[in-house]
Length: 446
Image (tube, rainbow, N blue to C red; front, side):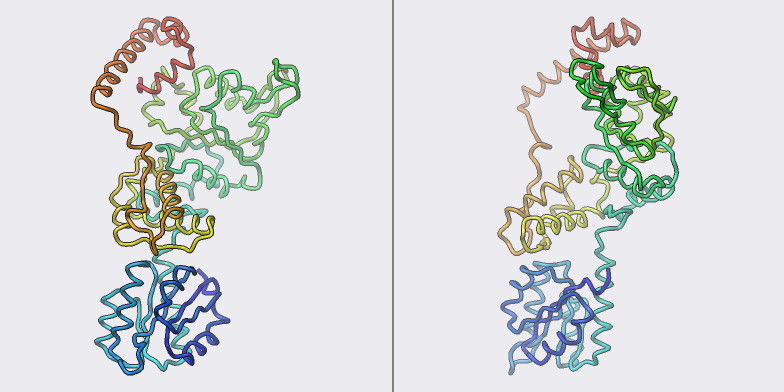
């Protein structure tokens, strides 16, 4: 971070010191906040996003024990544990210096000081804090310093400049869309379109029209020509999300387009050549896709030149606090609130949770905390995780559901086996549509 973006605060009861610091730093930093009364310190921090605090150790003219400064230091460390504090005093007392550092001060300065020394202190402590707490560690602002995410970043760096087709694997809420967009933004196609399609949500009737386009009159509601997503992404990147949820028939049509590098819009025999880089994503494990009864193996090879697995948040312990801090800043700005830090108890709660909803669940928890909190920092009780991820059924109902599920799964297995993997015949025997059968196959991991 450049020092020009920094907001520096200084709290000292000597107005001459405040004036001198303000004049010295006003051309070096974004903003200098000064305050004579330490009683106003917490309000100043609540109303402003301060990057570095200078705090005097003595605020009573006849009492120079340093206890006043140490008292306010402890208050700041409790409410804003991430804020670097430099203590200042007129007395070069090594005991006070040691005490303040033990209580969490980042540095210590003796006044009167030389201007150059003060500038060096500001620069070194601000830059150190920026490096230690930088939320944007990966490419394109992706937050992550955990080993698992560093491995993802290395892969992105290697494959983004190529035209290789990529398959992104990961649980819901892990950020597969963000990774796909990042790959495009770092590719040689970045000046061309990036087009996303949630193919898992497309019905049989809409699949071809959405991807390949149609001519006016091709079907009942085709009132005008429409360009498909393949054409829209020409010379750019096409991102097909939830690829694991499409039917075998849809897979066949997709495979034909990828092999031939042209598409045929509905209602015409005209071939339209397309030049795309393909990225796909799914929350299914690769082992499930390898089952030919649910996914064509030749399509897997076509879409999976390189695979990237995004780790779940529970395996990214080092990143959780940084992500939470990022969303705290984001939502404080969105809702016009001061940027709040997390208390020690709140950070402990964040680090111990398992995050079944991954980054998305953490994001919504922080948004709610910012909206609802009335504290001077985000406390543990402000952080409530989504009950959606923790629905518990009564024991009897669970047992019944398990039994019914097993009956249905067995019926599906028998039908598929009876018809030697012919999904259409199996669905007909079961009295459901092929799409419904594929959903159940996915549900039971058949």
